[in-house]
Length: 153
Image (cartoon, rainbow, N blue to C red; front, top):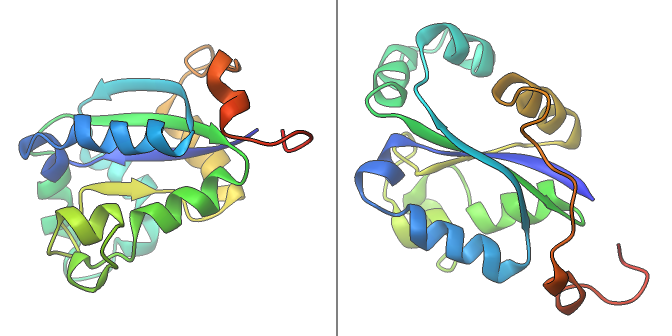
């Protein structure tokens, strides 16, 4: 199964949305293949958001992302990257569709509760950045048969 990275940002932690988000992840049928809490620092954020380092809002992004620990998770599922991105909604919560995580839980483009990998290639890079060898597990819960049809896995 394909894997993707999710970061529960400080806005999700501070607002105590983690349980609601995890419930929606599990309700959709994703397998949580790895999960942990960690404190980010500027070094890892410069690497993770390298495409944003020169933007005027980058210092406030760093400040926001180090304000509390975050939770990082590896989700597994068929087309996990695309499906979770669609569940997440567009970056700015004010523009995100109702029913998406951002559409239901946020009003901002910066405090937008979760990060979701944007491609299979970036998911692999990001997962390696946040998880050490042995922290991501390959397993299928017994209920996976209720989420996928024959020959879909």
